[in-house]
Image (cartoon, rainbow, N blue to C red; front, side, top):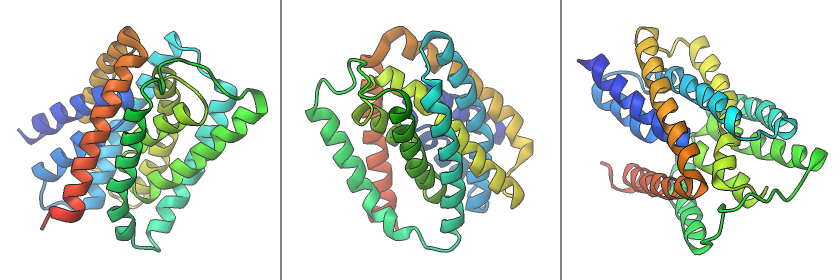
Length: 253
């Protein structure tokens, strides 16, 4: 029964992740509710062991239909991996609880900006090209990769927003690009959790398969309905993240 619950949660998380990121908003609470006595690090590691597969398959699916900016994306993914490892190391030295209180505010600002700028991310008009885009994308990957390793919630949404606002992508192309970087940051975190023994591999296979199924469904929906659809899902996911992080930070006993 426990395996069925977390597998269904993984499927839904894969679907949301493939569209705009934020699948952890679904899968992590399901894992914590199903295994309340487990060490948090083990549940985080098990979450990564499932989500990385859906994200990888989403990247492949997007690359078949969307022109992927590999010349800037690969440096961004590499920088994201390095940033994630650095963030994971820093979190062993510094308590991230102070940042937790600031996160709902940052997400609220991001959501408000998106709602005010109604045309944001509706058209694909990259602002940079060549080496300039590669350097800026690598900077985005490094900073948000560090955040993913250090703290994590909303990484996919921050990546999508950065690609839309900074690089001038539409939401569909930004989501496609974000998947590749997310694979790198998830891989870095998974390696670290595995090294520390914080992955339940007996759950990983079923959860990973379910995550892939959800990812394939989510990718098809995004490609079929385009940037406007991804924007709407982005707004809903960020709103959900605000509610969840605000509750965890300020209201939860």
